[in-house]
Image (cartoon, rainbow, N blue to C red; front, side):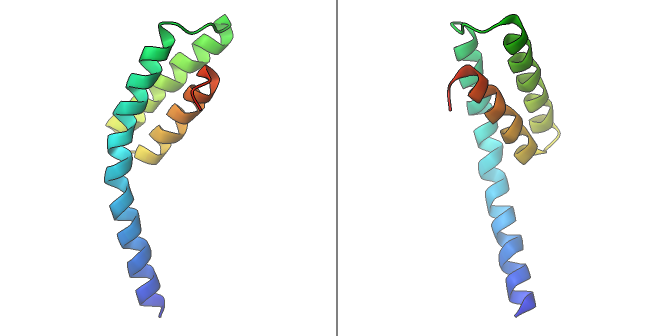
Length: 81
């Protein structure tokens, strides 16, 4: 029973990682497009740029869930989510 549960969890984790990898570039592009017309305070703009850069770095490093989380925060500040 435990082996079956562990195997299922492992397969799910492996199946979702590639999906997250493809989501990162789309999120970055959406953020980049929104930044051209965003009306944010200087502080919020700096935070969005920081989150976007860190999200890209995490994506490049293969840490896709961290990248998605960081980019989601940036999108929230831009009013995209």
